[in-house]
Image 1 (cartoon, helix red, strand yellow):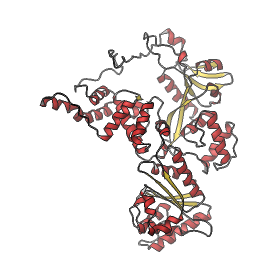
Image 2 (spheres, one colour):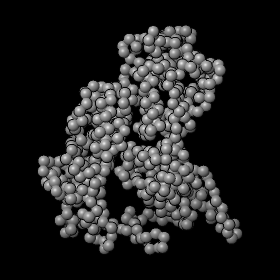
Image 3 (cartoon, one colour):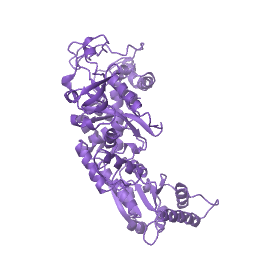
Image 4 (tube, helix red, strand yellow):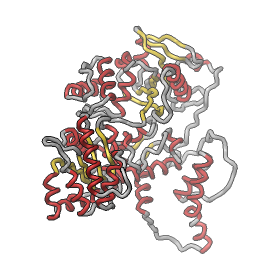
Length: 550
């Protein structure tokens, strides 16, 4: 409902385990490193546990996307199966076909063993990942232990990852599973997010969803989110989703502590009855109208756009009656001043005849600069055929120092510094609208800008530095697979990453391994440009590398 209004391409706080949205907090990074270590070093058994909603499934899906193509994977989500069904499902996931109907358990194991030997002989590896493993029966767990006997004299042929809730730890301590428990070489218990990571988690999901930086959660709102969720990602998603819906209905882009508290009350179903004078039956029937009509109006808002958002907001607050009237103009009229809320300012689009705008035609408004930015992207990237299902275009926002602009290789726009804003000549005493410089390309002594008429205009370095905001944005084609680069990874994507690093002056060996030297150079790059220097190449690091590469 609210995604298009806030500028998102999709719901940023969906509860589905999308690996594109994986936020590598210190706890999640450690879990990810444990998984990679156990698989690459062929440790046999790996166990990842954690509470409900801590992100275990999302982590597993991100892992599968990060593994090299030489590693064959089998993923099992339904743990409520028999030992025979388990073997049949494993072979199906690995692509081992059933030769004849009604094969025995031995036939399935022999087929699996032959597949694993063939994979090993080609230098590959195999990973069996079972989610919700706390639901496995003792019989099935014993069968899984027997699968670990498929090995050579020196190496395990299959790496078995068991992922489950905290009950899995207790299950594995049962005396009947002692032999299995002793074979587990890598364990990690995934914890919820720390308080300091909640802001990063929320902002990360907003960026991946295509946010343009116009939605902001206040410090008080983030504190309220942590107090409610205790760092549990699923709870964070639930309360943030509800808070954005409330903000949508109120025509707000800043999510306050009060909005979050209202969202928490809605999720919990809290109902507070304040004492007051007795009401008549007719008054009681009227008081139920907002409750009965709210779902209807939300559906109407989704179908009809913004025309009824005031009515929804009023019904949520319980301060309005229900009336039907044709929608008014899209530009709202000024509201009367009250002691609680200042009057809403009205911004009028200046006409082309106004001398101030004519003289400042380099300074573009939000809509013009954004449209120009996407047009420049299409012109520059015309030779690249981006498949619709592989990438999606998003607006990448970055806080950059003015001297960094000389390294930018793609079109970008920079928000003008506050002191350089030109007030709207149509409003007396109104706050100025944000203005942008749209840069087509950087030159030796400055840049080529695009003015309000779409014409190229050379500008000097001093002009750029004097108007620098420093909020910069550009169009970035996000890949749907959303690979996150971490130390120990291999593959062609790592080669491309290293090529980009070498292009911009960070020397690394052009191999397919994300090794120690690459890790250090990535950290140096991140530190040089104000990113979190953790060596993890996520959405923000990749977005900046894209801007600086040819």
